[in-house]
Image (cartoon, rainbow, N blue to C red; front, side):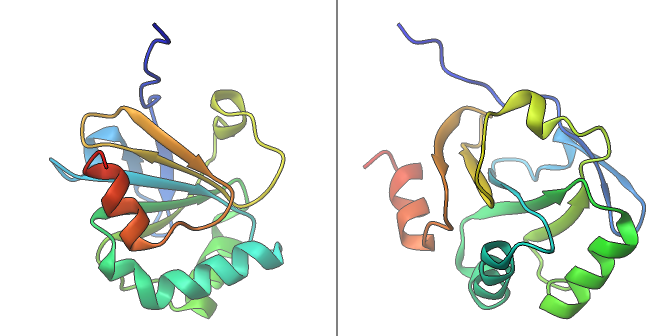
Length: 138
């Protein structure tokens, strides 16, 4: 069998300079992990979609980038992402996303279920309906 990929040990810093790790994923919630750069048009478009759509996703959404915190704060501000309950913008300060995953295009998006099992990789934002379908095993 193809061993199921498990979620790696995530360590990020949010835009309030607080450390965030796997234990900060709300209990019983799936995670949509999104790697981006603020200067990528496609990423900006994705952020715009999430501003209005994030609340409809049955998951925690973590948007991470290796860029400096001030850059990420500006992006979060400009995109109106700050007060979305299930979304966080964070710095991948250890640059580990590139060690764990192979990707060439941005944004890079990966969905983990509530048990930390990797379900699917996307190269563009899946709809909330698509995510719901995947999580329900359909």
